[in-house]
Length: 213
Image (cartoon, rainbow, N blue to C red; front, side, top):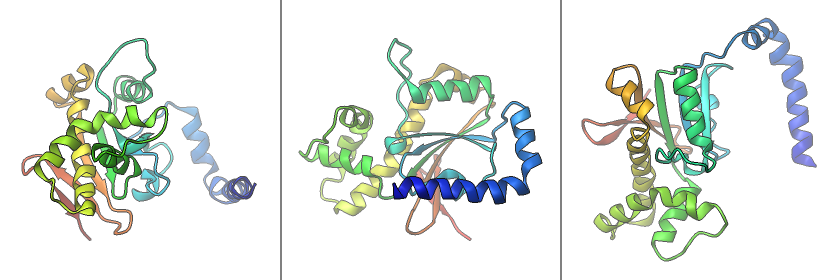
């Protein structure tokens, strides 16, 4: 129960400190409709919390987290689509103007994808199917860079998966229409856990550039 006890202790510290010091603000947030500044599609990885990385306050970010920060294609059917539902709500109901796909270094989901393309299929009932969303990207990258060292190949694949997710966002009519009309902007970002560096995708140059101090 150490993990649970730690969480409860953290809650108590929050309640006695941060909440008490900002009680009026929290009450104001609860009294009105949320108005987040941006929608971020991030990985479930416990080391890459967008609110921590961007020092955001409650109510500023609408965050969707899944394995490997992947965006599925637009498929309105009877299956369950958590990420797609969040995109629809964020764009159509909340009218968010910026969507960010945030990849990160050392992504376990991307590593599992890389290994599966190298003959070591991922285990599990759901993970293999989910990460296969980026399989075409992985096979294309490996075809062009088959002799690349593993660490460098993983980093490239992590970033290429972000670009592919940006492309899949545009398969959603309500996203493409708004982007074409200049009412919505799409961004590809990449965070280095160990370095603390954030890189932003420059579509004109087809490369990520670091945001430095």
